[in-house]
Length: 423
Image (cartoon, rainbow, N blue to C red; front, side, top):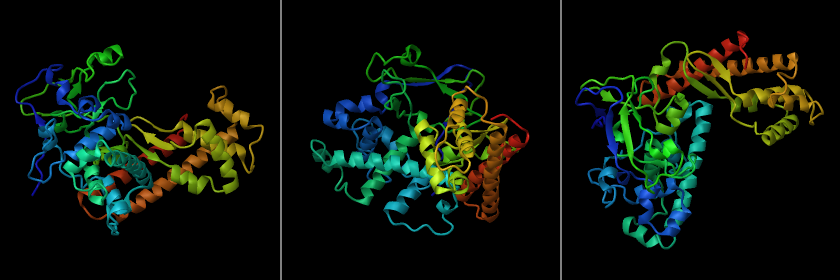
């Protein structure tokens, strides 16, 4: 049976800037609305994400045709997706924890290395949360309540049920100021009704309004906040029967795929895309070849905060490389064939501190040559994989879009290097 497409559609004409709908604070699921319903020891032991995931896990509908029995948020939980079979994290969990063998045509075998690395990081986040929640649920005072809801939390099925809860939170939570610090990880919520809005990177016509906590940069007066309001965008007149859409932000397809399980197909239009390519694996394989020398370089990069985040990225207007990538290549070529850090390392430190524009003309030339080599490696492997992708399944179309993005970004970066653009 084909799944119904959930969406928000306007029944009337809505003028720009007008209020679309509001959600009261008590209707949203977050650490503050759940906190009064759990023992203090449990709340203190878990992060907000872990607490919300645990609540969803405990009150997941028992069957496809059944509603959640949760007395607090049952109707809302019953509207959530019942499965995430097409999400790449599900594939990873199945392969690692259910001993599922990936056939040659399985999408996991075709993903770009940068996407696989991002998925591995997402999987570590998931397993860290699962093992923490699992530990809390197996101990008093919560263990007795858990036994009322599920027979066993020590099997793979329990992990898969938690994966359902975790993906619902990871793909649907939005920022919501609840704490005094605006960067607190508990500043999030699940929000009914908004869940039905689909993403568009180009046609978003809705945005959330600021709360008083946002305006005054402080914790909300009421502990659970004041609720959320959503408005029509100031430059969008919504017609009757128009779909009301939001944007998750200007993200690369890699991020959309790993975090949310889909890609933006419109990225393939034209010769420029807004995207990024993580090239850490290429630096490890092709640049840092000398084990003894690379250890000295890596140690210094890590000590100075420049190990990792080696990215090529592009927009519709330009292509650039990340500052850590430039810093790493400058250090690599400064050391030459040396096995130890020399006195001239101060030249590199002066450059990354902004006291000097470059180490030398030769060092800059070698860096650009290395960047060209990195681009060629990405272009070559993207072209090879794209030639081999013949199936037209949705998953393979996603894989193709990911490789197309890597191809376009690396080509754009290569053009910028030849054009002499400053990095």
